[in-house]
Image 1 (cartoon, rainbow, N blue to C red):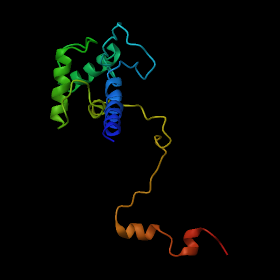
Image 2: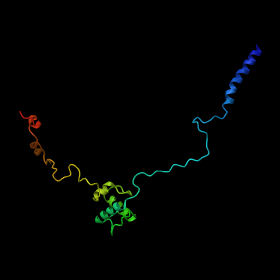
Image 3: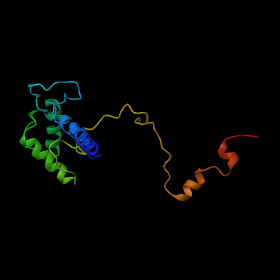
Length: 153
């Protein structure tokens, strides 16, 4: 019996130690690709948004800043330090943030915003019913559901 217990003990120890030794073997990467020695180029930071101001746009902004007395001289068409300083001062005077690129509110205030002349309600003939007092509002409204619906008997 002692020999059977000894043999059993040796078998158990052997079975336990085999997986421990097998784990030290090098395994291939699971991705299927072998390690290579080539280097991957580092990712560069990609700039988004407008990087510079078009010379024609810079000229228009400079003309508006000159008209509003934030710049002196003639427009150059270059978005230089003097133009940036004038735009920053203009935006600060309006209580807006003073970033280097012109704020859309500042451009609109300078008269350089988008052109809405082609909009549906942009013509001079567009009229709105402007009510000046609550009594005028009550007089302007039809008195009753049938009259308000426009259905005639």
